[in-house]
Amino acid sequence: MALDIDRHFRRKNLKRYALQCGLAGLVVFVLLLVLDAVTQTVLIAALGASTFIAFAIPRHLHSGPRHMIGGYVVGIFAGSLMSTLEMSMDVSATLGSAVIIIFGAIAISLAMFTMVVTRTEHPPAAALALGLVLNEWSVLTLFVVLAGVIALSVIKQLILPALLDLI
Image (cartoon, rainbow, N blue to C red; front, side, top):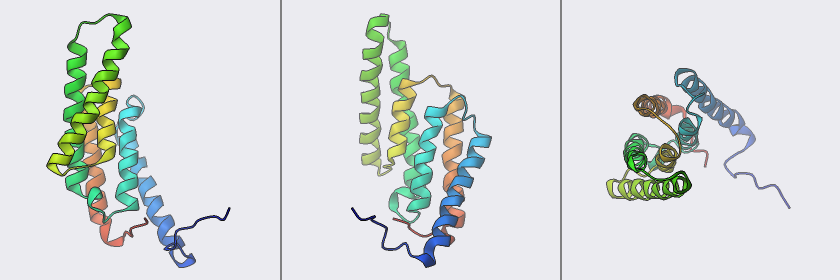
């Protein structure tokens, strides 16, 4: 089986690829230093996937501010709504897991529907909606995640002229 290497990747692009991926790692490093990533790892992890999209395909529609920031706003709305509804239900411990699973599935569906309708599709933000149902969070968590994606989007836009689409 032969190794399949991207046809755009040539020795002349090695430095550009390494620099761009290194910049993505640096941005995540700074975001993790600023954000409370230790206590909210599952929710912050969505930013890692968004970083991949922003830096691997910086000129793609889904790496633009409308999709990244708008998608997270939708994901936060859907996830926090379903989480709040799930927590307000008075169910026994044996039914608790089933209820969480149901509301998690609804959160994904609601986020997906809303993103498609509003043209703000961003898959990591749909994952955030699920993460909000499955994990404990606070209003501060929501602001931290939103601040992180805004910072990521702004940084990407500022250095966009120097970035290549790697995919």
